[in-house]
Length: 584
Image (cartoon, rainbow, N blue to C red):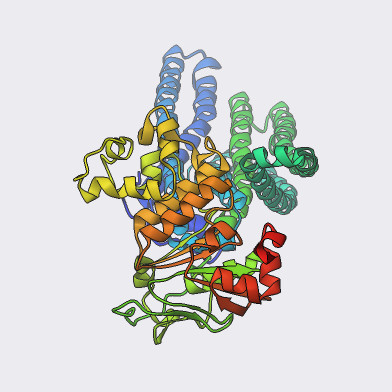
C-alpha cells in the first residue's frame, strides 16, 4: 500500500476512465492477485455443483458409499479452500481500494498545495470538500472491478463449458440469455451517470453554502439575515434531495434488475433442465448440476451489474478529480532576479506608485478596486506591474513570494495552537510572548512573536486564553471574534517581516481605540520598510506617509491625509467621519 511519504506518481488527467486505469497500473501485482483470487473463488463455486452431481450419479444413485464419501470429502475440501480464497480476495481488494483512496487523496492535496493562493480563485471550497470527502471514496470503490469483476468473466466462461458438456441446448440458452440481461441494464447505467453528475454538482454548491453559513453565522445573526440564508439553504437542500431521489430511483432499478433478472433466468433454465431430465436426455445428477451452475451464475451476473454501477459512479467522480487536477497555478515564466535594493512598485493600470521605505495607503471609492491593485502588485493577478525597472512577471516567483507578502484580512487560519497559527517555526516562543515580565535581553527568536503580537495589539488575546499561545484553535479561529482574528492575521504577517508588506483592510473589524493603537504601532514597527494598507479609516490614514485616492480604479489624487482632506472633496466625503469638524 502507498506510504504516507511516497510519491503518488503523475496521474493521467485525460479523462475519468483513464484516471481509474492509472490507479490500476500503480498497483499491478496487487490488482492481478485480486483478479486471480476472485477468478479461482468463483470457478470453485461452480465446481460445487459438479462435485455434487458426481456424488449423486456415482455414489448415491447406485448405492456406492465409497464413491459417495469420496465426492463428499472433495466437496468439503473445495468448500474449505474456497472460504480461505474468499478471505484473501476480500483482503486483497480492500488493499486495492485503500491504495487508490490514499493515492487520490495525496494527488488532490498535492494539487491544492501546488495551486496555492490561486485555488480559491478557480474553485470554491465546497467543491474541493466534496471531491476530498465523497468523490475520492467513490473512485476507490470503482476498482472492485479488477477482482470480482474479472472473476465473474472467468466463471461465466467456465460454467458455459461445463453446460455444453451437459446439454448444448441449455448452454445456448445461458450463453445468449446472460448478455441480454447485461444489455437490458446498460441503458440505466448511462442514465445513472447523468443523474450522478448533476447530484455531485448540487452537492458541491450545498457544501459551499454550509461552509459560508458556519463561518458567518455570528455576523448573519447580528444583521438579522440568519433566516434569509437558512431559507436559501433549505431550498438548496430540497433540490439536492429531489436529485438524490432521482439517483436513488435509477440505482434501485439497476440493483433490482441485477438480482431479479438472473433469478428469473434461473427459473427458466431450471424448468428447461427438468423437462430434459423427465425425457431422459440428462441424468438427475446433471439436473442438479445445471441448477447449481445457473444458481452460481447469479453471482457473476450480479457482480457485473454491480461493477457497472460502481464504474459509472467512479467515472463521474474521477472526472471531477481530473477537472481539479487540470487546474493550473499562475504561470511562473520569470527568470530574472528581483531588484537588489529597495525599489518602487508601480502599477501602470491604476497609476499606483509605491515608494520604498514608506507607509502608503490606498483609499478607493470601491474597496474592490484597491484589492485588485494589491493583487496586481503582489503578482496574484496578471498585470504589467513593475518592480524597479523590471516587470513583476519577468521576476522568478520564488523571489517575489520571499520579499513581497500580501496580507488579506480574510486569509485562511489553520487549526492548531495559536502559536502554530501565528508562527509554526517559532517553537518555544509561547512563554516569552505570554510573559509581560520577559527579560529585556530576550533573544530575537523569542522576541519576534512578542513584538508582532504587540504591534497588532493582540497581547490581550493571548492573555485571555487558558493556555496562552498553546491554546488549541479551531479552523479559521472561529473560537475568536472577528476583530481578534483580524489581529491574529496581522501579527502573522508582521512576523514574516517582509521587505514589502501589502495589507488589505487590516483594521476594519477593530474598535476605534484598538485601531488607533495598531495604526501607531504599525508605523513604528515598519519604519524604513515598504508597507501598503488599503483602508478608509482616518485613524490609520493619519499615520501614513502617502495616501493614494482611487476613483474608478485610477489614482485621482495623492498626498498626505490632511492635504487630501483640504483639496479633494471626494476623498473627504469618503473618509471623514465628522465632516463639520474637518472643515472647521
